[in-house]
Amino acid sequence: MRWCLALSLCACGVSTLEVDEPEHPVFALARDARTSDVFLVEPVDAGDSSEHADAGQAAPIDRGALSVTAPSSLVCLSSGTISLRLDNTGTTTWAQASGHHVIVTGGAPLSLAARLELASPVPPGASFTMSLPFRSPAIPAAWDVEFQLARTSPFGAPARHRVSSTIGCTVSSACSFPQGVPEQDFTWHANTSASVAATVNQVMSQLSGCPVNSDCPLTPRFPDDQAWFTAVTAALRARGLCAGQHELGHTDEIAVSDTGCSGRWFGYHVFNYGGSKVVWATGAARGSWSIEPSHCPAG
Image (tube, rainbow, N blue to C red):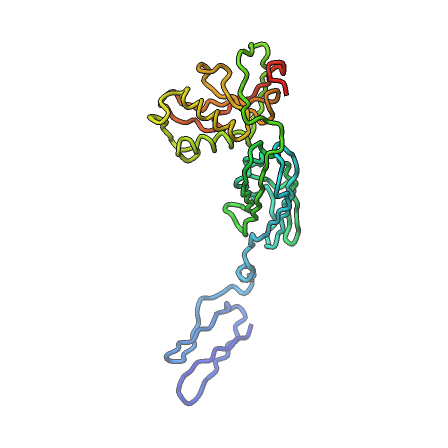
């Protein structure tokens, strides 16, 4: 290898030193700004350029965009599909194995999961569309549902969509659980309802003045369990749900239905007897029941 080193030796000229040394390592050159001297710095192995190649490559980037196609107005207790499109505009492949997913905020009333996994990898420049089934609750309200791309942390701009639900079903605003139903006329089911649980939480938060999932004492405003049960079930009925106790004044849970008396009733233990505090859903969920329709009022 042949290389040159120019040294500033005097103000009147520049001398050039040429060295013929094939086995000498390659050195970088640096200049002293004050003296104009040029000198050798850290040697580099000329036979290994991988380190420089790696250093010259840009680090992989997670970047993307989301778009939502969904109805803006729903009739209560209706079902449908939300279309969520993911566009990979970065330089990494999105995959479940590498931790890529979508965070959903505010989707509980529509029975949407809080985390969506990718069914297949999405390479850079590609798009992927998720079809998300939903069921609207039985209460008139509006929700802001937000979708956010994430890996170890969120990235990209979130996509937001407002959905409103209007009363359009046959649930009575004065529907209570019928009294005197014998045990043999109950049929137990294991499933729960995210939308009903979210509504129960909203009502309990409004009545107690406490944030959802907080440590929330009920006394002295609600002196005992029955006062709390009565307030919660009345507020749920005012929202268009059926609600009550299996036995007024005795049972330690409430029953709530978004499909009417002859539909599915969801049970919730909403009172902590160890300290007169709120028990929030979904931890309070006790499964669900249906009863013989003959115990329900006609119409």
